[in-house]
Image (cartoon, rainbow, N blue to C red; front, side, top):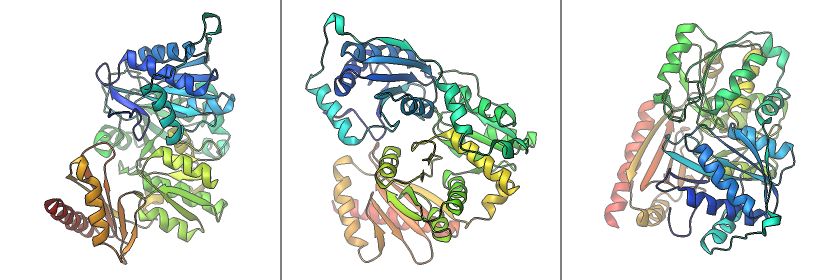
Length: 455
């Protein structure tokens, strides 16, 4: 964590007891409490071994500033976000490192609408933290702590209000759920059973060491899920990340689908019912998302990469739907944040309504091949590289919201952006053939290498 910087692209994160310590968590807690000023805050954590420890530390910091803490225990991030909004809390703190490995943890701060606080508000908390401006109240003005253990129940009920329960129930879907030994197992299997699905789980015992698989639902981590779906003849497989706000799906043939394909299905159904609505998505998303918007009278609002940016943009432009290629879907009528269980219910509803299998629904979409690449680039050269790259591609159809994205006549595209977390440049190419996508990655990796040589 750099000088005077606590927050990264998604909250505060670090290695337990190395970068993120108990002492630091107490200080972060009192900085957050000072920022909120004696308010009612919800606090919860995911399944990591260090969750209870950091929750107690943050709670102590909050109570010292006069904030009242409503402790929700272990729950998915979207369940906690829903409770904050639903119970008119002033805000909340979630102890999670989302998709990071088990030796990490993190702290997310949530506003009263259930959405993570804006970057300007993060800067205010950082200022309090680094300038030592934390408030300590008198002994008789300390905040109080309350148990608040109904969040998971309320969350499951809330999701059911947004889908046709009887339509899904009539299909008796068989679903395999892989919650990565984390909090998704507290809500998703139950939601699916209440939708009359036959539920089979793998990696569903809570275990903060994540023995089943790494918590990021990437295709290479989901081979076991794909095998089970196929072997059982199930209708669907779904995998969540560590805090269950993202969902990646496996079709009945055992094919694992990246997030923009399933998001595009939800987008299509949404636009058929709500034409002329705005769809918020990062520039890293597939052209498929734009194709669907064009075909069904939607308007795409492109953003920088990052879930907080998508949520904040939805809030600003009053959009009801957002999505990311990593399996994050933001369904505004429920809440404008990523929500893995809500996404699962929406996919089942589409399968129920259309009477089609997931493989069939995806095969009907425009098909694109995606290739990814990366090239090392020192932090101090990232901006110069970007400047030179922009100069070289002027005159092409480009977006510079986040790095450089170039769209070509033949529907192929490439996004070149500096990583927010590592000393690298990432390349995401997409085309109607795998070969073309691969060529784009090679061509632009060479361009970047040449630019780096000149610096």
